[in-house]
Image (cartoon, rainbow, N blue to C red):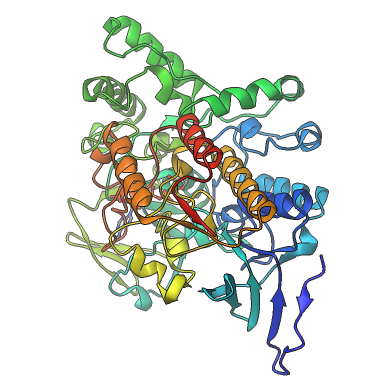
Length: 546
Ligand code: NA7
């Protein structure tokens, strides 16, 4: 692509570039968005990426045990038959290097890298009402301007490192799982403390325990987990998937969560105890997120949910040998899957090891980090390494941190101070021509991400195509439809048990001071897609176009 280098390029290394579209982020969404805008619409599009490689979330998340919780055969793009037929996954759940390899394969296959500016961190984006142009500035003093700005920054990319008293005094090393060193961490013989038992902590603990001298897991909230049952993908599996991709995608798009399986239509309360137990046992043996789909009402009816929660609690007691530890590991404060359900490879078994200790930090809260380790209200734990598996400032964090100002200088940070205000998760009023891929208010993290991403990218691309065909220069979400959409997002969540988990990151509860608002759209992927399509077919109802 020929980016126009402005004659105004200054001698101090500052440079200005005018393009048709700026995309921020080179993960699953940024790569596909670049392909669509450049190769389908013929636009001058550029991706700005902070990292020195493609991969997005998977570029940063390299902690021990980091792998995808969606199955590999559908945690990938569906838009290109050649990619489908040429790529094969090695495991049921791909590990982080394999996902990066896949994204590099796609980027090379589609010749995307020539339009991706790596090591280019965006520091601000500002809209000019007079010219309907976005200007994006970067840390290395470059300026990019374009009529359209698309954020493809992911939902889980702003690390949440708790502000713990004394952390700066710690004489050992500390790491956040989402910003893991590229050359790994040597745990051999080390005393490791891990804080956090979400999906990440549950993946990491078994691997760290195997490598470290000793592992202390500091647990604030006990969690449910389903065995992943990871394993190699056979040649037969690959053949079957390749032959059936059309049906796989059809099924994935027709459902609630973008996974190619159907949720049972039977209530958990409509079967006998024996039959229910048998169904849960089978799902437990099969492993993975599909456990959630065992019955129609696991996430809708508290009594139905209790049957799943009780089953999983009984499994913890079966697996963990010490009854007192099993009890500490058993969640009672929330129902199964009301928080993001982790899947694991030997998580509960880890607590049967001699070199692993579990500390309940609700019973003995952390007071401070000391030079030698972690001090709770009860005792000091000496540590060489602290691993923060403490999650992310999810969904809004990566967007607010971009320092975006829209029409008349209105700041996104202010617009969202009481929670994200989006229309369809795609746009916010006062931020014309700014599109967000899988933003708050869209199915996003409740969905198999590549499916959600493709739907958003396709919609945005069609919208820009339509605008250009009609000579339109500006599109902006209107305030009233946005208010209605935010209300609908809440209604959709309230129709489920999801808002009941008070410590859930879906609600922003994991970040102190963050507004408690249910952020993703829980109405289901298929329903959401139909709404977006209907909006587009009706002249982009709810958007002001000019
Ligand atoms: P999560 O799911 O937000 O888990 C973070 C964990 O860290 C969770 O157990 C938290 O306890 C704990 N946490 C967070 N802050 C603290 C502090 N200050 N002190 C002690 N413990 C704390 O993040 P993950 O990275 O595991 O997973 C994020 C998503 O990535 C996952 O759902 C997948 O979609 C992929 P809490 O439960 O808040 O009490």
